[in-house]
Amino acid sequence: MYETTDNAMLTELGRRLVGGSLSDQAIQRATEATPNFAILPWVNVVKIGGQSIMDRGRSAVGPVVEEIVANLHRHKMILGTGAGTRARHVYSLAIDLGLPTGVLTVLGTAVAWQNAQMLQYLLAKHGIAFLEPEGFASLPHYLMERGAVICQGMPPYKLWEANPDIGRIPPQRTDTGCFLIAEVFGARKMIYVKDEDGLFTADPKKDPTARHIARISVQELLAQDLHDLIVERSVLDLMLNTRNIAEIQFVNGLKPGQLTAALDGEPVGSVIFNAANRGAAA
Image 1 (tube, rainbow, N blue to C red):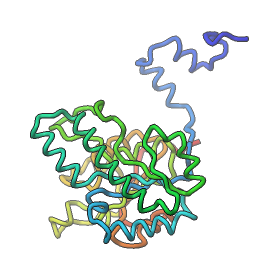
Image 2: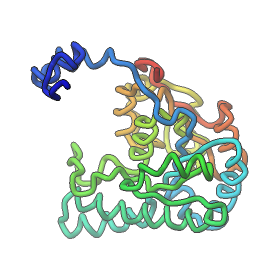
Image 3: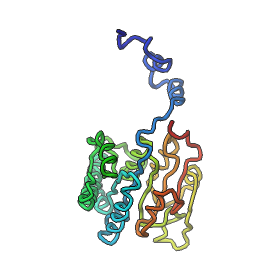
Image 4: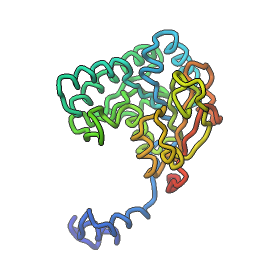
């Protein structure tokens, strides 16, 4: 039997990884040529906005829940929740108290968790479970059995969240957490359910001259450096290095049918795509 340290068992790349430094740029480039394995290529990650949908209560959440249920037999979904206004309130208190970014992340995660719990109870009669990151090993089972699963959208960095370039607000919040789930699992789609018709040149609630952008590359969008965006800027930065998710889509959850249309592959709302995507999963 070979010893686990026997390099004869390893591929050429394996020998380089074992014998070299993981900071070696040549070794890092060599790993780029490896294939992508899509873990859940048939799943759709759907992020339900906190402030845009959950905070509006029954009038907004009810129709979205109905639309999710109507699609359970047609589309597998990982449903992530945003944090919304309550997170903004707790951020303001924590910042006033001088607390660091990592603590703000813990507090924001708690609010996203509350929204996920409410969504779970609304979908409980359909057997839709809420899973925290520690339970993600069971996620494929729930998807195959019930068609959907719920998670809170914040990435589980908590105290380990990196400080932003400016200020103290956690830069990677619920938009980012849902995006990372989609990328890691090699999801079919990443859909954000908001309260607007997608991406605009400015906030349409404040600027009536804002122009709707139906489709744009992430490279062009970053170059425009718009003051207001429908998505966290960290998502755009992450998109530059995606291996699986080539585009993200935004739909208006206040307009029944838009989520279904996006799940069906229709070009509703807005799409941001990576013009330099490194290829679909193998």
